[in-house]
Picture: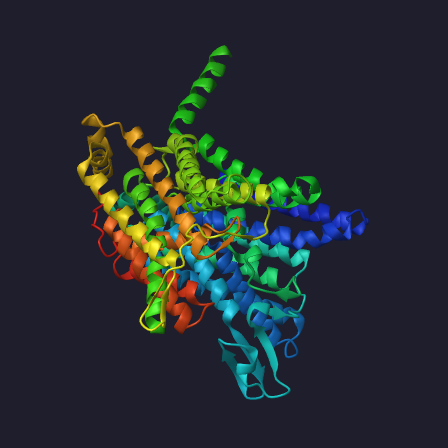
Amino acid sequence: MNKKRMQDQLITYGIVIAAYIIMEILILTGNLSSHMKGLLVPMTYYAVIAVALNLCVGILGELSIGHCGFMCIGAFFSAFFSKVTENMLPTPIRFFLAFVVGIAFAALFGFLIGIPVLRLRGDYLAIVTLAFGEIIKNVINAIYLGVDANGLHMSLKNSMELGLLPEGEIIVNGAMGITGTPHDSNFTIAVIVLLISLFVVQNLINSRDGRAIMAVRDNSIAAEATGINVTGYKMMAFTISAAIAGAAGVLFSHNITSLTAASQYFGYNASIMILVYVVLGGIGNIRGSVIAAVILYMLPELLRGLNNYRMLIYAIVLIVMMIFNWSPNVIIFRKMILSKFKKRR
Amino acid sequence: MSFLTYLINGLSLGSIYAIIALGYTMVYGIAKMLNFAHGDFIMVGCYVIFTICSTLSGNTFVGIIAAIIICTLLGVTTERIAYRPLRGAASPLAVLITAIGVSYFLENLALLIFGADIKSFSSVVKWNGVTLGDGSLRIQGVTIVTIAVSIVILIALQLFIHKTKEGQAMLAVAEDRGAATLMGINVNKTITLTFAIGSALAAVAGALLCSAYPSLSPYTGAMPGIKAFVAAVLGGIGSIPGAMIGGLVLGIIEILSKTYISSQLSDAIVFGILVVVLLVKPTGILGKKIQEKV
């Protein structure tokens, strides 16, 4: 890896760590209201999932609008694991294993979803990931899972159908979701997860595999002609992206008392919001995603008056950014303006 | 007899999907882009009819005509402002993300204007329908009208595309945009016309959808829009009869799975079909296989 890239990576970590230290100082000196303190963990896991989505959209070049589905998978599997093992394992080990479970299942689903879709063109991927996000939400809303001395019970109808023993416990209660997941997430762990995901993604980008992935993005036929396994690399990037989204889900589920597969967290609109972070931060720019996620998450909280117009503004930002960055005519126009400035100098 | 009733309901829902899917498939076939906002055009059409019927003249016919005109204008304007500047962009993602932005914009604009509460939409079809047999099989008026309208639209579109100059131009642009330009076809105009027709169809679909399922919210169009896309893929995207078949099949599957399997899982089943189709036959039932050229 050359020196400049190394520096670039270190700057990203530096920004995250500096922001973390500033926040911690604010908390210690009591300058942060409890409302703002409650926003720190969500802010961080949105930054994590924005990094994951940027890997998929910016580096792999495939638009996924169901990334919240992977977050949902990570959230539910890890919360289920934590609930079952709540009294069996000490907290740090349990939370670590919850991460392993959440990430593994999100990666597994990413892999399974990737098989049919990644062989196809981009538009299909967008729709199928969207469909997948909806399927996950619907299925989880219909599942009832309980545990008692006889083991696990599952039903798709209602909690009475489980046939639990009297001392048994319902864990996943259909549309009511999982309640009482241990509150293990905190800002420090969230920042560590963010740093690890940044480390994984940035090293991937600068590796041989990462260059292969970007070659596939830029021209898959040319990449294939040079002997790159196109489907393999697509699967790899997509699975890693899903796994990181799953990690965000683990943070999510262990930060909330009552976890439901509601649209506001895992639906289409939530996925679009993350896409806005990625687009505004710069498609393919990992550091930009983190910064955009933090700013866009905090901004509406600070400017309460704008809350009603927030989504509308996001939509306009999305359209204007795309036209400004990608329209052939605008690109020519921008070059013209720039060259005029250069002449004057 | 109850099975027959469900089948007819499925046909009716399927006809609505088919009308929406026609708009999707035309735009996809000719402009080579996925108009994500298509479902939201439906919602706009519904709100126009709702506003006119409940506050202004109260005449349903005026409402439908106004909805068609406004949706057509909306489609053409969207194409002009948001999609045309990105034609020929280096990344295919650009126009897709813009379309998502337009969809998001329309939903949130409707949310600001009309609020999040669900409005109850009064059916545009005042006819009660017919009872067959000894009264065991009742078919609602809106069901019959929906199926009839979709058949009329299909025939009209087929005639338009194969018999008129504009329709031939559409086929040419769909086949090869560059060659069509060389033959003197105005590509921009043809694509604008496609958007106009697609959006007008969305307004019609909206009127029928909200008559059959009378609850209107800013998110009314989103789900049917996505399912109609599934229908278009199922039938073979770019093919007009394909969209019709795909829509009908999807509608029947949805109603039957809602009835016999689980109402909560019916969406999951519909989307599961999409995944299976893409896995087994990505070009759909009537789609043509297109080899990517270097």
